[in-house]
Amino acid sequence: MFRLLFSGLTATVLIGFGLFIVFAGRANTAESAAMLERGVVVDAAVTKLELMERRRRPGEGLYTAHLRFQTREGRVVTTSLHVMNDVGRALRSLPSPTMKVRYLPEAPATVRPVENIRTSGEQAEVGVLMILLGALMFVVRFILAKRHEARDRAIAAKSRPGPARSATYSR
Image 1 (tube, rainbow, N blue to C red):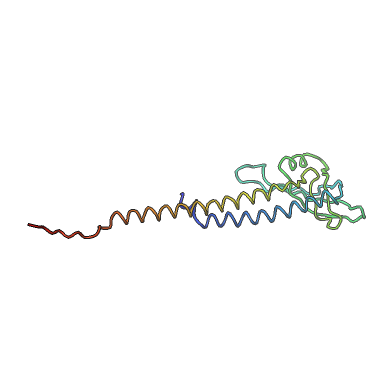
Image 2: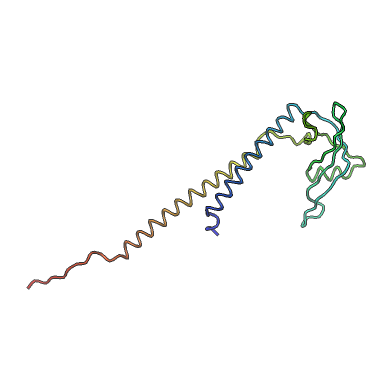
């Protein structure tokens, strides 16, 4: 168990995923900042709501809301958006559901729910933690390897016969 936990492969995978999450988090943070800076708020009609259910929890899962709205320039945009369980259930109970979304004027298909725009960089912070954990695993692995090496040398030194002594008798 500990051998797998402190293996070089596990540490490398953690660092790799951490790097991926850092870059994805930075991209999400930049997009969220653009949404807050230049985004336009509109009411979008939910034309279809899909639920991809979890196997073990019926009625829960990932909701996808298919949206239709009109931009300030009059262009009609249809896009889809993943929403949280409670939002999906609330939308499902309405006869003609709508939701407030924010879109980027230069890319109207890029939408986010108004209440779900974060610029804190939480995702990038999780990635940094993964990178640090992977690096710590490499350090612990290195220290343990040095300890085992020193222990093996000490055992080998004890089991080695000492210098040969000549037994001379004087009479």
